[in-house]
Image (tube, rainbow, N blue to C red):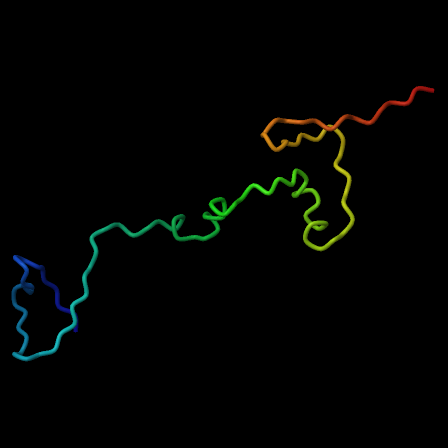
Length: 100
């Protein structure tokens, strides 16, 4: 059974009307009054960004299969925006137009 009470001056005072027999063995479990953490705080998916590290590999997203499984690298499309090691934006040049 569960009985409720409060701690007052270092002693446990049960709610009015609760009578326990002498020498009864009890287990005390502290209830927190804090609000439960939101689902977002508990879901590991929302904590993935905390695990991210800078790899220095500028084409990691484009060539993930190359770095994981050794597949041939794919070419980045022209006019793609990439960031260099310092966070500067770099643009790959468009293909050169051939005039006939």
